[in-house]
Image 1 (cartoon, helix red, strand yellow):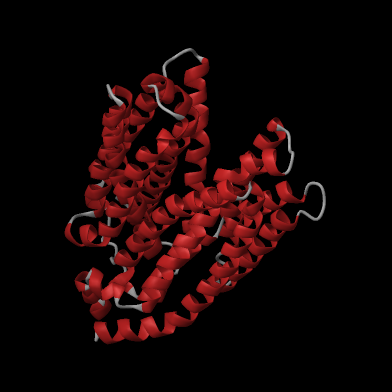
Image 2: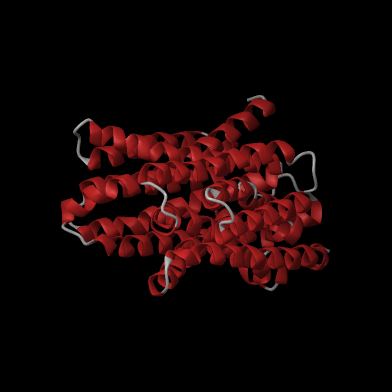
Length: 402
């Protein structure tokens, strides 16, 4: 196959892979009332499923560097998609809630491996622009999941049908990755000589010895926790703390997630025209300004407008930090670093919104704005430390490569 066509094919599959990564996340919110009714569950029974999903996600992400050093990238993606398909079929066929939770662990393992592997591939073989667009595809999938499940339910079909349909798509994608497995390069395929040898021999322990690795994990933990807290609590915050109507609040929450996707597309265009660190700094300052609007609510529509602006400003953070991982840590640690960061992001996604909810339970939902602002300020500080540590990490990587 022509090299240019091969690169285009693999990139296209990567985009579809990220759409498929978002689809199951979008299904669950719409399907949850039907799942509760099917198994006779309480409102808060979702907790065990989220724990299982997060546990599998963290384990797979954290192990991805070691897996990529041992097996072909295309084979790993095929196996991960097959695991995700099996978990979705398990959801549809589960006879009991405990069985469905067990399949949640498998779903987390599959999704975590896909997330880390595709992030590593695009980060080491493509530009920050491409990474932003890759993550925009996740938004497309996350927005499409509710459409699929709503269509199934409004057609009078059981919720299991929605999971079955998405599982068929995952099976097809797994076959695509399997057929093209020999075309996928190694994660350090464009690095030569000593650096390439180092990339094949770096261990997870060696990566964790770099301060930049820990700072990177802290940045991802904080950022994803902030992003998910805003998305998870925005509807309740607007309706209960700001007196926004139900329909209007739903529209603003949709705008938040839509702005996140648009932000990734727009910043993807800008990524090739500005320094990545400067782009991230500007976005972080915009996040803090938007959070301040939510916290202080200086005019009647300040909070919902602040949430929409927050979503737009959040757009480039995750993909841009992933794109700079190899530069911060070096080729020897890129795969491990990406996997560790994705694992930290999964923990932030689970723990920080839970923390926000616990604080709100003991005070009020008015606390959302100040907490988002606090997270933004701490994230800015961590990013500055991360940027300063990059040169130190580069020196250590150079010593390993020599």
